[in-house]
Length: 166
Image 1 (tube, rainbow, N blue to C red):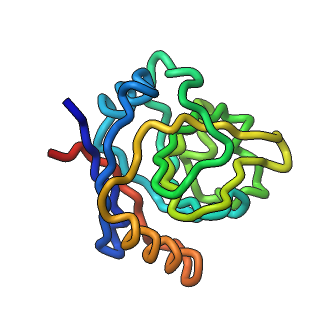
Image 2: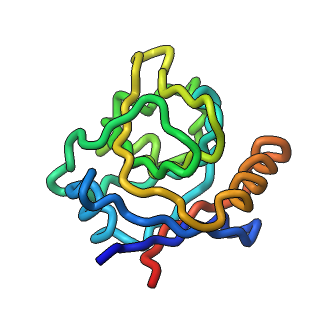
């Protein structure tokens, strides 16, 4: 039986529904499902292009490892990244006030991709593959419009939330 999650930009009042890709990323899906709900400050990507994400404390134990990885996510992909502290703590990334980004335990990045031509590369570290664990099946156009608004008007005060759905 398919499992679904709801992903919301809370301040903007926009949500979408995604189906977990249990067959393609079973360890990641189980880790995320067991850790829901998750919520944190929303960020719009600087380098990856059409991405909105949040950073939360690491929750997977054990870590899922790499499965169903990509460096070129497509619109509707929902992606898990597990970062060590040394990978995400660079002040150039703009997380000065984020305790999640500066934790000695690292951070978990939960991201949605809403447009084409994304490339997961970091000038400091190179390729940054992530685990595609869900696909948005409802509400992508509305999330894309809200994400574009984040890019144009800023993310301050916005949260990105992930929860189990019926």
